[in-house]
Image 1 (tube, rainbow, N blue to C red):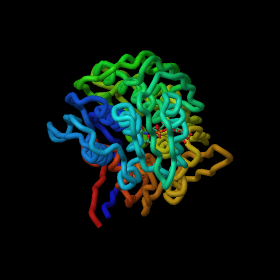
Image 2 (image 1 turned 60 degrees about the vertical axis):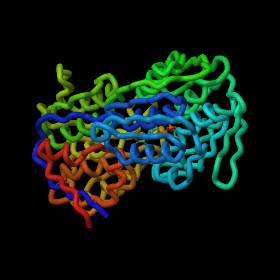
Image 3 (image 1 turned 120 degrees about the vertical axis):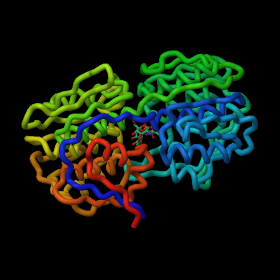
Image 4 (image 1 turned 135 degrees about the horizontal axis):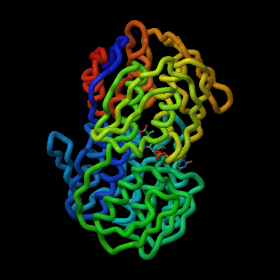
Length: 420
Ligand code: EPZ
């Protein structure tokens, strides 16, 4: 098994280019099933999860060709041979569930292995199924699979009890070919929803309101192929902002959309970090000392992103003062706490929140990545910790960060990837 070895880093400095968004490219790739036309997707990040989605589309019947060393993917689905997502792919990547809406809309049937839970929570799909049923699908769950069937989906009204990102995406992708108008309320407003809607509208869909809590979709008879460039990854953006902050460095983060990381910028500024918009990107510097504590509460977009919670917690162990971190989106997203405490942090869970003591002198040791963002938090902690931090189970990290180690090394970090 491969590991990351991370030594205490001098203040990071230089420039880093952020890659395309993992959480935008996955639904957009799934949406390509909605047409027989050619879809060309560019600015694709080099990630395990993208490889898994390519494999899933190929198993369904798509031809998937990678160009520009993988940063451009061409997908043509002339014929859908298999209307299913098998368990071995779904257990590798929960986002496989995103082929359900397109398969149902295009072929009238979709059979998906139930994704089950993961490290951060039970991850139910009840809201996905509620939405598809509202469009006329018959849903049957048995033997660990869920099957949705409909001769022809028809427009309907759906209120999401929680603004689920995946449910919003699945229902949009089903509704674009439904007969009539669909109105979705209390939906997710994430930038990745806007990017998916932008791609679908280029294909000929009629979607209005993406990025707000209400989306209106007028079904069309068919969609065409389209070209699309994926938005930058806002979570990778935030992660590198924190790499600069936790090492007290000076880093220019390029190829980003500052608006997409407003909550992270606001919180860094509350801690005394200098964050400046420039023509080339956002510059993160630490001119004031000491940096001070703040409180974080994760919320659906445009609130503070849950995917940045563990990374920000690692940073808060190094500032002056005590911080409160409250995770409201997932029920079990504090897996990083145990490992951070083994590095010398002092973080206590109290109810739904975590109390983070500051000014901790972290020490490098052997730690385990339990999930993607907890793993990223351990990388950041390793940059600040005395000695060497050895992170195992790094496949969690590599599924969501493209060229992570290379980008950190370019900024002066002492990180290496070793095979056991
Ligand atoms: C997407 O997951 C992201 N993944 C996650 O990023 C992100 O953390 C999450 O949205 C929230 O922003 C992708 O886009 C591939 P949700 P998703 O449905 O769609 C509950 C990362 O690190 N819920 O918005 O699965 C659910 O239990 C990953 O890149 C239901 O109750 O998230 C959770 O508590 C991790 N019923 C909350 O909603 C449902 O039917 C948010 O889940 C669906 C969700």
